[in-house]
Length: 261
Image (cartoon, rainbow, N blue to C red; front, side, top):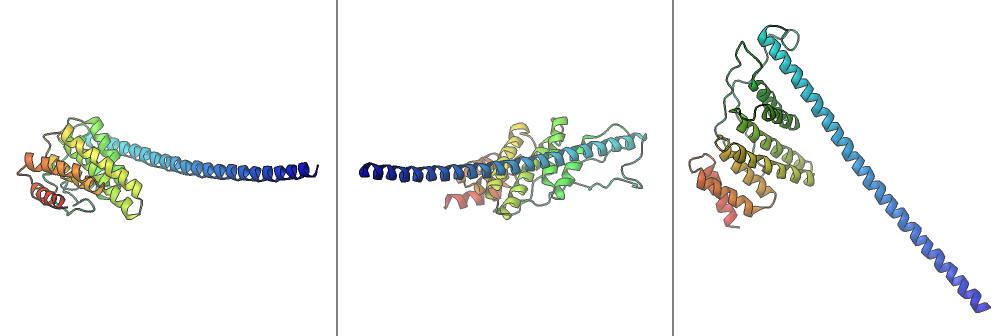
């Protein structure tokens, strides 16, 4: 009987220990799940906020463009009370963006936007200009939305290749910002997106002036992504197919650097 009581006591102790371990594991899993759910909730909230901001921006752009259209037609007031004219840059010069590890380069030929006529319907240049102004101010997400809207409406316009290029540049700029903020995962996501957007310049607009620049910037993004073999292939393609482009000499320098590693 004594032995049986001792065995029962040990069994109860063991059972209590196992129950405590199970309770601990359940609490740990529950806490981990709660943390994951909270993180996902924050991400969803952030995405919702971004979507709301972009939606508001698109609506604002639509309102501005409609106001400009009324102004051109002479059937409505100019946008902004008391505004005599709508400011616009004389040309679309490149603000000198480059990859964080690259040397700033001339961006190649940039399409000039002809002045808007004083009569007629709304011009595609208005949408392009609004997006470019957002880019020049550092509002890269808004610039991406604006250039995408331009491409959606005018995929065959003479500025379509440049619009596609600036989308890639905007993602490069976002990547630099994330890198500066020590957000490596987001920086890599933006770099990967930049690579895809630069590829579209050549794929969709092979005759665009921006093709050599897009190839070079794509290679720089690949270097930042630690993909030197792919970067070398793109640089070699640039050198072989665009020997007279301004970026070609820089591409040769990068090739030499990659091959010497």
